[in-house]
Length: 400
Image (cartoon, rainbow, N blue to C red):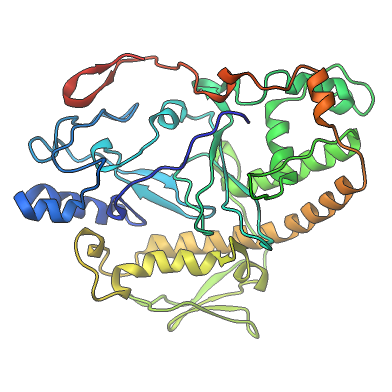
């Protein structure tokens, strides 16, 4: 996937959050303030201040003049993928975001999928990649942000973001629909994505994805990757939302209090504890699921409890919900379900890695001979996808 984009850089944490109502309250307080107070609340950087105009984000209607002079209407927040397993909200106003990566917004549509790398951490046994149908911000629990790679270079599912000739070369190697040894039929971009999710392994310089010669091994990896894709997308793109079988589904046994201050796990009873709140059954595998050395359930809770966990918080960040919204409980139950279902698939990934290690894989020379390598420089750059005029800073129109 040669075209990759750095993660979003908001420059100020208050533009994102797990609660959309809080984002609107923050916006209203900011635009009501003036002068030095607005400057303090905004948290200026070299890229953005209240007096900085900015182009509208592709597909979003927003004022492009300086916020201090013309704030415009409140931009309705959009759902984004915040790190591997957290969905949050973002105010889609380019004047508030240091680096919003407009090239990603241009190709985000109903057919697009985004793959993002998790930061490399030596000894980490967690997944190397995640995939989402939402716009990802590229956050990494390991602290080192990973690259974002769209599956398609153009809207409408057009032009896969794969090395030119790769799908045909894999088909010629016997990995296509005709079965092992038959060759001829190109492999689909979706199959390459599924294999990548299943087989990728982390490395200091970025994820490594071995390509097998054996058609049976390829088919097993693609099937495994499709299950990973189904679980990570959580029902997006017309799929079914993940569900544990009866008897294993987590339920609220005691209501979550209005402002829980801690999260813990009772292994003996398989219960997640949010102060006096109780959720069970919760498999130990879901509680121990880590990415970048961090428990996903712990970091998910910490982001939500931050609104009332730190009494010294000031500014717009301190504006959060008065208590624990009911929606968060539903999201928590779904997250527990996804993490529990991912555990046996990760066992399959370890078995797949052993099989890959015991067989020969396609090497660079073979890919060079097939014309896949070297990848053309144009494939590493975004495609020209401008299908409509985009308003630039101060009402000018961008010409791309």
